Image 1 (cartoon, rainbow, N blue to C red):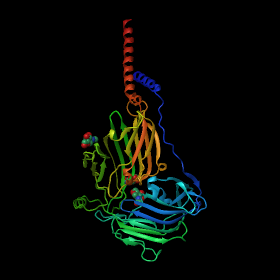
Image 2 (image 1 turned 45 degrees about the vertical axis):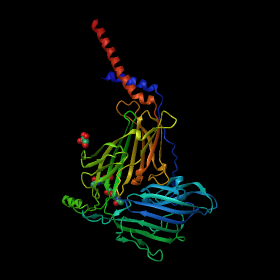
Image 3 (image 1 turned 60 degrees about the vertical axis):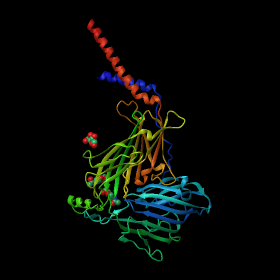
Length: 507
Ligand SMILES: *[C@@H]1O[C@H](CO)[C@@H](O)[C@H](O)[C@H]1NC(C)=O
Ligand SMILES: *[C@@H]1O[C@H](CO)[C@@H](O)[C@H](O)[C@H]1NC(C)=O
Ligand SMILES: *[C@@H]1O[C@H](CO)[C@@H](O)[C@H](O)[C@H]1NC(C)=O
């Protein structure tokens, strides 16, 4: 067996060396990170926030904020570096940060860099780079949006199985800013009007917050005289009898096969529920009753997963094996397909559940040839899919792998940007890596693009990734040719050996 294998390998090597050198290229990545800024460093005071409105949305299992701020250049020179501070404990939990010109949102997001302040420091900064420097005394309205992962805490931390759940959210009534802020306010949208506890302040005349249904408004405050960074802690506690679904890791593989005309998706989830834990042992009887009554629960009972039209062969496997409690409705005639699956057990607060699911699609719906080039392809796929639930999902880490055919080269990628936020962070906050992924009889291995994002939410569900690559007829033929040449050489070698044997016998 061994000599034959050696012959095959040698011949494969021949086939290989005759092919052109194949390499994957990454799009040029700009490193904007400023490292080693000392901990007492302060951004230059060249801007003033004339008016700031923060909208905090607590309808999902994480906080999402949009801040609209009118910024004025108070310096004598044009300025383009706007610093955005976050308390250090929050900095790593900021997800999907995006900044645009609020009045020209269609022009796209601004470049954002991370400033690494030397520890210990209470504050870390993002640096927002305005594409056009702001002239002295001119104003721009920034639209800043982001999510804060792991920002909601259940109180009480442990409840009875059928109890309602309450979450707390803490923040500062004065938004941490690097600059003087003249007026500001914060509007909080709760999931319901059941808000039993909230901090009241005397920072303004009249009631603070002002309440209207499920929206509470802190401010407006006159903070012209407050030093930048002044804080006023506020905590709110509100009902949220839903799970707080957290994926500590999602691995998502998209495998392109030109031969099979197939796009195979597989996703592996490590989920946990950050809801209140159970005070007592889980009771199946109580669970059956409350399930029958459709009572709200902080347990993960079912996950609803819309799939692209034309998705086929879905599977759902957890640590034990096939899960039969899933229901699949194929999307007929361009309608979204839907996979509804129940974990093997209700996932209560503090519990974990990991599983994997996958399906196939016709590649033609996602791939086309690049205009004007026979050997270039454009692949457009969702960056993130995932369950679509009212309570949302926060992802601590997402690793997306796009596995291209063997021999694909000159690979470039880009997240599709639209007139509004796609939920993804900017290109500098997405780590990319190219590698090769070897499978059976591959000579070169498949070109693989791996994108890693620390911190994402279901807001990025509709984001699209475009991957372009070159792939010629020869790239496509390499595998069958290699196999044929390999097999042929085996027969040739066998024939030669047989002949030698025969000649020896004759003697
Ligand atoms: C969520 O759960 C994890 C693991 O149980 C825990 O470490 C973390 O502190 C929780 N987060 C919040 C905000 O409660
Ligand atoms: C899982 O179920 C599918 C059909 O529902 C079946 O084709 C497959 O063989 C099963 N796999 C295992 C490991 O039981
Ligand atoms: C759940 O998973 C986390 C990691 O995400 C781990 O730290 C924790 O111990 C697990 N909890 C249980 C109850 O298995």
